[in-house]
Image (cartoon, rainbow, N blue to C red; front, top):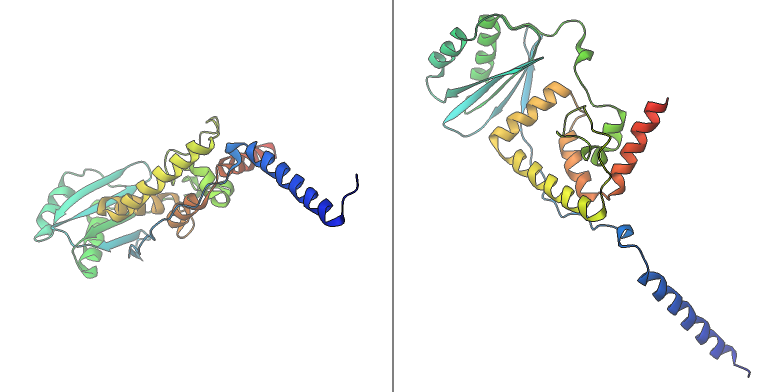
Length: 247
């Protein structure tokens, strides 16, 4: 039986179509890529900063509220004092009176409230003087910072860390399946956005930035890369950690 060239071409195309259909039908669902999440942009937080004469960094954020917060971030703890929007000096003095001994190794002072910049700088200066706050010693590198793998494989590193900014990781955690990663990145980005939009969340985020010193805009980068990521992000991060450990 002889077929024309046109008939042969049709047969060949039909065979290729059947093969492709069979192949697609057998594709492992785990290999199907995830669609990027449609994330709302994180607005500017408008934190300002300055460096005191004693070398202690200060961060402040002006917010509309009926009270404010002062946080003294030390190497081994943090001290939180709420203050009223008006007549805050008396309450601040009460906090200082009960604070006790001088505080060495002060990483930063964070102030968030409805006050003007000059008031916040006055609060910081008063705290430094009255509590005899001191900047960290000559070995600031002892504080935990994010490593190469955490900065390079941002989304994947989040799977192994309990906190977004923490340097400590749990490398024995099982790698995620496709649906697990989808649920993880959805939950994480939703929580990160809610944290970003709240005053208390902003204070915690800025504290983590002051303590762990991640690259600029690391929180926003993590948020966006999680939304764009695939489950392979965790494996890429793990490979990076293993390569460094083997060196």
